Amino acid sequence: MTTPALIPTTLDYLKTPLRIGEPDVAGPLAVFPLFGPEPRLAYRAFAQAAPLGASVTELPGGASVNDLVVSNPTDLPILLYEGEEVLGAQQNRTFDVSVLVAAGTKLTVPVSCVEHGRWDGTRHAEALSPAPQAAYPQLRRHKSAALRASVAQGRAARADQGEVWSEVAAKASRMAAVSPTGAMHDIYEQRRDRLREFEVAIHFHDGQIGAVAAIGGVVTVLDHVSRPDVFAALHAPLLQGYALDALEATDHAAPSREETEAFVAEVVHARLSERDGLGLGRSAHFATPAVAGTALLAGRELVQLTAFAEEPGGSTRTRIRRPSRRR
Image 1 (tube, one colour):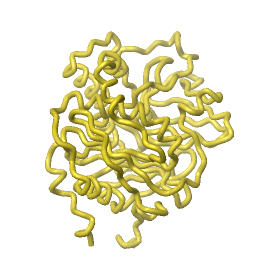
Image 2 (image 1 turned 45 degrees about the vertical axis):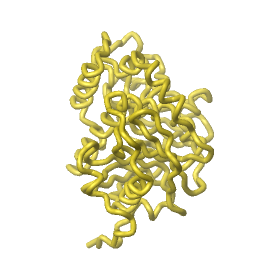
Image 3 (image 1 turned 90 degrees about the vertical axis):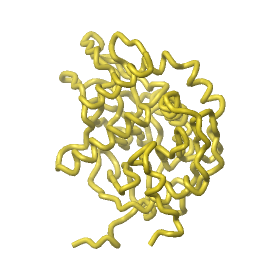
Image 4 (image 1 turned 30 degrees about the vertical axis):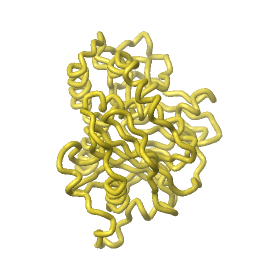
């Protein structure tokens, strides 16, 4: 039997610890830049690879709501980031999991529809394009929990499509966003002026490989990749998602550096449950009473990490122990 001491943690895949910088703050949103070890694996974000010929399309034999084909004719792997949105074809989707698509290969990947009212077969041959936003943290957290539950029950790593549609519809209702096709994209489009205010205040920092976002004074989500150039490509879409959730929050002082460091410590010390993933590398997930999320591992390197507070806005801060009190 495997003992807890032998079960790896995220820390086992980091050559040096993750470090946080001073936060950028805009109203109820505070974003702490995340820094860490030098990257080893070379890869690109989908937004970087698309101009080089990479594409995302419907299944060639007949479209599927929850599957897309990624073609990577380039010389490096492509990282698809969980929650990343692609627009077009028969309906807009978000990626359910983070995947490394090997150079010179095609791969079918699991996705969720975020445009309930459109299924346009006349656009079947159209390639989907990178969206200016990723899914917002509240939706991503729901998707991650459903995916982890599915894996725990021995099923494929997929989100709950019905729950995704319900969450997007509820968000649109709360924000009085009108969309003839129930598109998450339209919620963002109707709030671009407000979201731009957050873009002006919150910046990408040299060497940054991730972010810890606090909304309404509560640490909510951590996003990380191993390469600064890849995180630079993901920074703006992820920030749009943080900001959309922040529009529903009230102004609050940013959490302290100590509290944010305790959240990061809780994440990197969580025990990982690993499995073979799609494409390159291995997928992993973790859950403690305070944090839960997913990771992508390649060799001994942590390529991607997403972590959510288990009770955003609730008692999470009382559950996270300071690093000095860990055993």
